[in-house]
Amino acid sequence: MRTKSSFGYCLGQGFANIKRNKVFFLASVATIASCVFLIGMFIAIAMNLSYMVNQVSNNVCVTVFFDEGMAEKDILDLKKDVEAWDKVSSVEYVSAKEAWERFKNDYFADYPELAEGFADDNPLANSASFDIYLNDLEDQDAVVAKLETTDGIRQINKSEHAASALTDIAKIVAVVSAVLIIVLLAVSVFLITNTIVTGIALKKEELQIMKYVGATDFFVKSPFVFEGVIIGLIGAIIPLIILFFIYRSAMIFFIDKFQAVASVVTFLPAGRVFAVLIPVAFAVGAGIGYIGSTIATGRHIKV
Image (cartoon, rainbow, N blue to C red; front, side, top):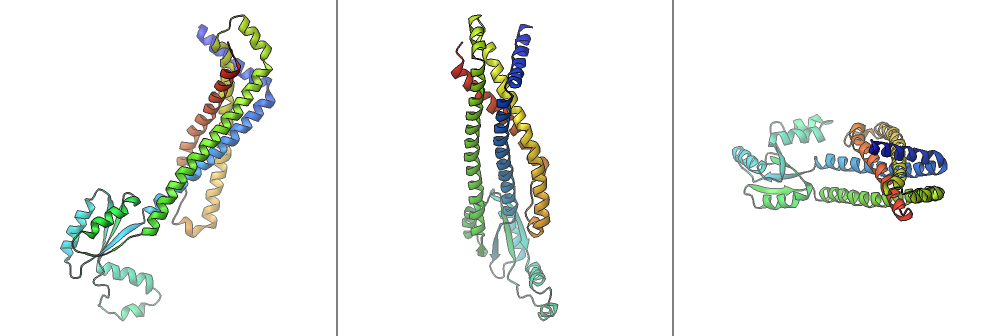
C-alpha cells in the first residue's frame, strides 16, 4: 500500500509540476513535438524510399542468351539448375517466339503491315533468353561470374548502373537516417534536461525542506522524472496526428500529379507506416523525457 501511495504521490506531483510551470510545460511539449515530428517524418521518408528501392529492384534482372541451336530441353534443364542457386529469386524463360511477339507489340503495334512482311519467319529465332531475378542486387556480380562459366550461354546482359545506383541509394538513406535521428535525439534530451532543471530551481526551497525531513532519493526525484515522461508522451501525440494528415495528403497529391510514376512506384500504405511510427513516437517521447529528467535530477538534486 505504501508503495502504491508513494507512486500515486509522485505521479500526482508530476502533474502538479506541469500545472505549476505551464509556460515551461508548453515549451517542452513544443520542443519534443518538433523533434518527434522531424524524426517521424524522416522515418516515413526512409521507409518509403526503401520500399521504392525494393519495388524497382524487383524489376531489375540479368538476361542471358543461349548458344545458337541449343535444344529447348537443354535450355529448360539449365533453367532448373539456375533456379537452384541460392542467390537467385526466380528465372523467367522467354522463348524465341515469345521474344518476337514482344518485339512486335513494342515496335510494330502501330505498323502491323511491317510485322506481316516477315510472314512466318522469326528474325529473333536465336533470341531465346532467361530473365534472372536476384534475392539481392549486390549479388549480381557473383551471379554473372557464375553464369560466365556455365556452358550454353553466349551473352549476358546485366543492369550494372541500375544495380549500383539502387544499392547506393539504400546505403545513403540508411546512413543519413541514422545520423539525423541521433542528432535530433541529442538535441531533444538537452532541451528537456534544461526544462527540468528550471523546474528544480523553482522548487529549490521545497526540495531543501524535503531533504531535512529525510525524504528518500526516489521520493524527491520521481516527480520530476514522471513530469519528463508525461511531457514526452504528450509531445509525441501531437506530431503523430499532424504526420497522419500530411502523409495522406502527400499520397493523394503524388498519385494525382504524377500518375505515370505512381503506376510504377507507390507509397507504403499509411497503416504500415504508422504501425511503426506510433510505437516509435511514444518510445522516443517517453525516452527523451525520462533520460532528460534523470540527467537533470542526477546533477541538480543531491539527497
